[in-house]
Image (cartoon, rainbow, N blue to C red):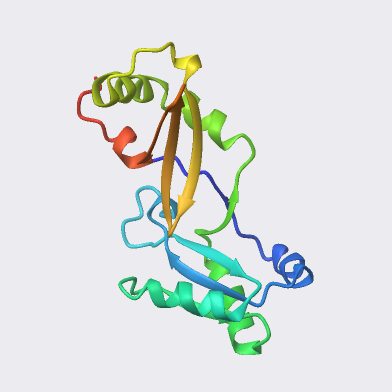
Length: 164
């Protein structure tokens, strides 16, 4: 499972504070789960500069038992953030360098098969523009060919049954 997000390191906290970030919302992130460690969860931290936006995002995640709202101005929440980062498997909403190129290289055959068998597009693969988006902890692939565009969960491409 390809993970395009950058690990959250403690050294980034100061930069977020300087940028004016007020809060982080932690949510479950399946792609952040370490391989072969079924009991260990992965998380993504979404940063917010406005308190209302952080609270609203947190409220939307009411089905996620791992959600947390952490305020950078609260010492207890700041300590909790450091605890989470020390455990590892915490990512931030920043893609790693060349995420699209890496994903495309890794999933080349599956992307081709998805385009042909699911979308019934028949261009050369180099004619299809490929990008990654992350929304509410889910990674999506955006495929564009001429006037056609589709956004699909990356897992649908990765787990395609018609690919040998």
